[in-house]
Amino acid sequence: MKNGLYIAGEWVEAEERFDAINPYTGQAWTTIPQASTEQVSAAIKAARHAFEHGWKQTTGLERARLLFRLADLLEESADEFSRLESTDNGKVIRETRVQMSLAARQYRFYAGYADKLWGQVIPLDQRDVFDYVSNEPLGVVALITPWNSPLLLLSNKLAPALAAGNTVVVKPSEHASATTLEFCRLLEKAGFPKGVINVVTGDYRVGQALVGSRDLDRISFTGSPEVGKSIAATAGRNLVPVTLELGGKSPNIIFEDANLQRATVGALAGIFAATGQTCIAGSRLLVQKTVYPQVVEALKQRAEAIRLGNPLELATEMGTVANEPQFLRIMGKIAAAMEEGARLVTGGSRASGPGLDQGFFVRPTIFADVDNAMDIAQEEVFGPVLSIIPFETEEDAVRIANGTRYGLASGVWTNDLARTMRMTRAIKAGTVWVNTYRVSAAQAPFGGTKESGFGRERGEAGLAEFLTTKNVMIDFSNDERDPFVVKS
Ligand code: NAD
Image 1 (cartoon, helix red, strand yellow):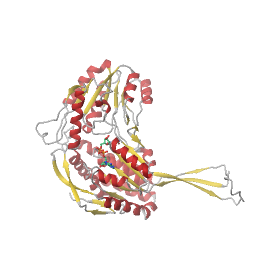
Image 2 (spheres, rainbow, N blue to C red):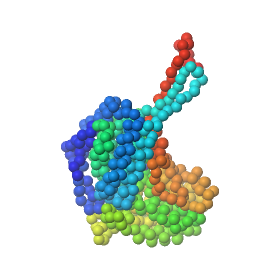
Image 3 (cartoon, rainbow, N blue to C red):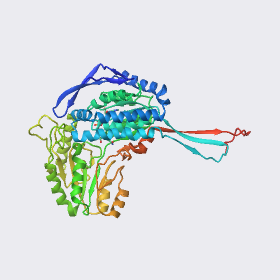
Image 4 (tube, helix red, strand yellow):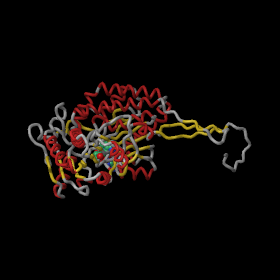
């Protein structure tokens, strides 16, 4: 696969390139360019030029047409893109196939908004001043993404950014850049003008060069809380607004009155789908004591039956961890959990056997009798590791659920309507799922509270992140007025 940086509509060579590793084989399968600081500046300049000289004058209908075309093209190439994504980050093809449809759905959803960005007319006390509010694009925005779901997470940002009329510079993760670069070919095919979308790849130095620029109008970042804090600090110095989608330690809560069959499947999907490498992973499972032993046993049996294997095969249920540093991090967290006294129910080691030995496979791992104060309950693992915590009362469940620095997602399993209402109010998180987990929709706003970040993606709220409000007052009187007093 031939690729380069994508700047001003051209493929640009970088002086350095690095290997992209297939986490299933452990082998390099392509190379990725490492952009220089000058190339990052060139990408920002190209985006600024494209914004000022053309893109900001486009009509909503023109942008909508391009976005609809892009959605069609992505759907047509979904097989190719899902194979690429699974090769690059080890996510099972069942999941990456769905991710491509969800990504296409984002472009369709926001295409529908592009020609409906109307504002408001505001009746004032000053009867001969006409006031209107318009929504305008911000200008140039930087979009920085992680490795776990590169194209889908990019689409959460790119679709509203473009619909609103901004130009962008994208920086994907050095661990999974392939689909983002390949996606530029679809952007070209769809007909986006040169410079509207620019992509610079490479490691954290590229990210730092990008966020350090004073010529950005917003930074939208998805990644770890540590990097999010450093980006917010840099952006704060330049007064550039930021949207931060960070980590999570989400509680998935099973009450005794729930449909336990469904709740167990929901708990399993919440942590082992995507090999636990999702920010919304239901990594803390809170189970009411009266049903605790049976839920732990059912989860053990199901976890041990999960089919690990080649991410490109449809039968595979859980793929590899996406890269070696992450694999080592997860193994370190498992060892630390055992040391701090969490009871290992299943897993806890590297998976081996036919077809597994070269890949970064971790066996689905469950710890039970976890205390919420333990590191394994407080720190994001970002891997297939579940901590089960027993609780007695609803009040206990709320206290444990909220006893974390994160506030991204949560799940509640109950058939009691009044309890549902109380729990959905009491949980501090950007998303609460009830009798389900991991439902994702272009229309529904998504984001975090506390150290899970701020700002929203998807839905109408996701569009607002990329717009600024302009208020216009037109005085159509011929009054003589006192120049030293506010007109009231
Ligand atoms: P990361 O923070 O290490 O890297 C994310 C991106 O930031 C990469 O492109 C990286 O190169 C870049 N980067 C690194 N250092 C930088 C710096 N100093 N300045 C600017 N850019 C820099 O995250 P990751 O390991 O790629 O992804 C895993 C994390 O992402 C987890 O914490 C996970 O919870 C989080 N995540 C959040 C969401 C969400 O929507 N809330 C979704 C997926 C992943």
